[in-house]
Image: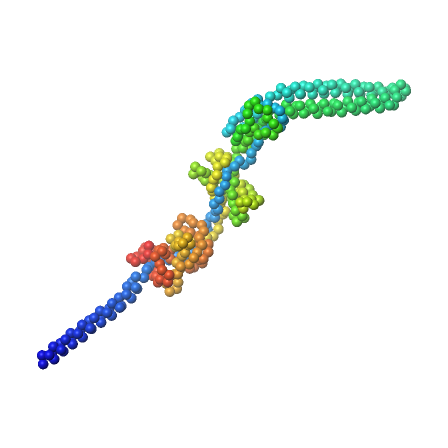
Length: 372
């Protein structure tokens, strides 16, 4: 009888143990579902906005003179007697630049003046002889052949005088060329002449920057060339960090066959701190055009490519490859891969997984469990 009671008690205890264990197991099986639901991330979303943004292109180029003036002698064999200016000097139109020794040109001038006087005297004599021959030809004392000879002598004397006058003019010009004057306002950029040298015609003595004006010669490729027009604003950053403003003066019409680039000529202020020969970076403002933009925090980078997380109807996220363009403040332009009206996770894309379900926040501040 005691054995039966012990057996019944043991069975009752075993059944109670199995019941408790089964309840705990069912509670454990339900717990992951509850955890999964409570761990769903809360995010903020944004939609692309169309904004009017200024468009510009970044280019590089050298700073060069607007126009250069080369100072050189026009006459051979003249000795340099004076170099009146130095590098960096400003000169005015008509100012003296170079003076050559003028003793030889002056001697030639005096010689040609004497030849002119002699030719005039010869012409007067020839004219008088021809006139007398014509007057006496009617009386028969002078033959027609002699009259013709006097006429030819007069014509020869006239030609000799013309030649002498031309030589005189030439000597005057040569004498005037012993002084080289500035043809325009300019700044001396380089000096090649040496005192005492006998300069050859066309040899460079000075090089000047006309009107002391410089320009930035920006190099652009063929794709950029079509969007650049005369009058557009440009900003040039000098090597010392200062930025100067300029304006597109001329767009080059020839693309270099070796580099594939064309030159855009940008005028810069006369009193700017730029110097010829500087290499500068800058940008050319192309105007304003619409841009489809997102907060920069909405764009994730993976393997050098830009992605956004789109929120679908079932509130599950999917990544999409996009192309980006201009940036301004905290926003970025999306040039391809996105359409207006689509919902994009505005922050925390790096923590999401493909197909994950999210909860969309409708408040301005993050709540516990929300992605920053």
